[in-house]
Amino acid sequence: MDKKLRLLFVDDEDQLRLVVSDQLQSEGYDVETADDGDTALVMIKKNKYDLILLDIRMPRVSGIEVLKYLKEHKVSSRVIMLTAVDDLSIALESIKNGANDYLTKPYDLDNLLTCIRRVTTR
Image: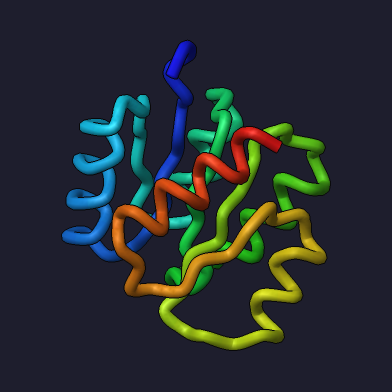
């Protein structure tokens, strides 16, 4: 990896956020985290990210709402939506609103890394 990709990982599950961010950092990514959509929006307004890993179901501001903000404000970050619910309508809504891909939890590190590589090399 020539340039260290800057990622924002947004998930309200503390343990998952910690484990995944550690794994991604060990793979050479520059990772920042947010525990909800409100925090993610503040971070997105202040920083540029190559990729945002975005949980769909969070309290207060959902991942879909964050995704809509990204689309409305033409934020150039790539986005992978993450959800524990395997629901085709949620996947379609995510793609319609600008997500580049969609992963269902639980996912293993290999699947996540494959998805990240696919999305960031398009």
